[in-house]
Amino acid sequence: MMNDALCVVHPRAAGLDVHKGHITATVRLCTQTGGEPQGETRTFSALASGLAALVAWLTGHRVEAVAMEATGVYWHTPWQALTDAGIQAELLNAQQVKQLRGRKTDVEDSRWLARVCQFGLGRPSFVPSQPFRDLRTLSRHRRTLVARRSQVRNQVQKVIDRAGVRIGAVLTDIFGSNGRRILDGLVGRLPHADILASLSGHVRRKLAPLGDALGLELREPERLLLADLLSEHDTLSRRIQDFDRHIDQAIAPWAEQCRLLETLPGIDHTGACAILSEVGPDPAAVFGNGHRLAAWAGLCPGNNESAGKRRSGRIRRGNRTLRAVLVECAHAAARTHKCQFQAHHQRLTRKRGYKRAVIATAHKLLRCIFALLRNGTPYRDPATDYEALLVQRNASRWLRKLQEFDILVHNDDGTLSLRWPSRQARTVPVH
Image (cartoon, rainbow, N blue to C red; front, side, top):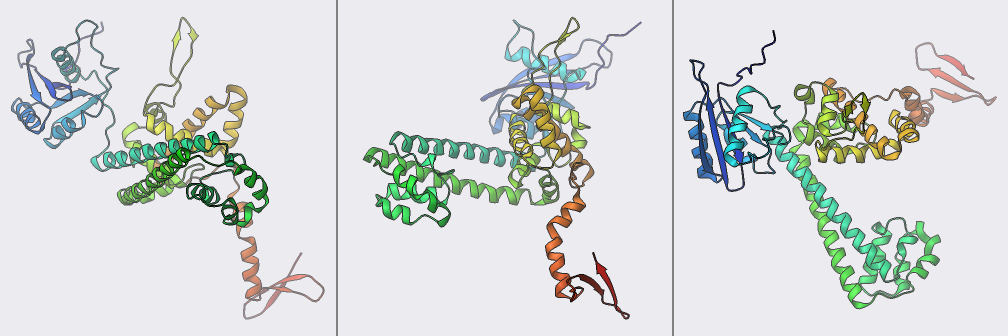
């Protein structure tokens, strides 16, 4: 006969319903006689004094573990205060510990969370250490700045297109060196001949269409708007560079893990820092295997089966920042020649379409990231002959050095010979 009784994991547990201004806390204490558990509920301020009183109250009840929902950013300070006090804090996904409909109050939520914590019904979320939480904050804010700069670039493109100055139809990047010279010249009211004369040599063949594109003049409101947008763009670029320096300083202790991630196709230094700030330096100790890490990132297909029929298995939300970074890296890896990710993406594109193929490529990329960080070894692509690639890259330098040290010599009959520098010189013909 099966026993469906719940087992007590934490005899002295608590649940917190965290809000911006106040925290509703409930302690749930099991009695030694096996009777009904005792409970008490109080409300504390979410400010510093209230957090100190909350920790003292929980410590007075000798609470072992506390469960709380991941509500926005409000959980950070209570979680840190409990951790500093030596109390086990469990951060739970609100969707997984939903209260019954019709019983939604702060007090009922805190009581339910205390019950979930006491019986171990919730699966705690992954919360990295404080250095990586700080690094994650810097990395995510940098992505916000990059998104703002992209928005400004789109606005600049819209301004000049509306004015009829269609230089974007001639130049690939209007924010490159030549594009900025044209934009700054338009803001500074320079003559078109001076603007075209300031361009570099590799766009000389485009001077005629560029001169045609500059045929229309910017009106004064458009010039003022363009000047303001370019100033904002330069300010954002400087802020992004400042955050790059701060991120490099913060990630310096884990530079080796960052270097390992950079060996993967499609991942540069910025992407490696962003990925490492999200998953931490040792994901194997947290997630156990690559499939659980992929599920946490929201890159695994969902399970949706009923009556023997498999329905649409859309990916779940997961870690949206990590998924966005991996999708960007997957786009780059799918365009890297002679690597397994390109073939994987092309094969799935024919079957499932481009977007699903990108998600699958990001999934594969994340599992490779897990293996790299777990084993501590750089990436080696199974579809690449590294020895042939090494020879192809260095053959000309090797031949030049052999000729420089008179090891590879040209004979009078036009053939080549290898002359080994030894006591008894030997000459080996090279066919």
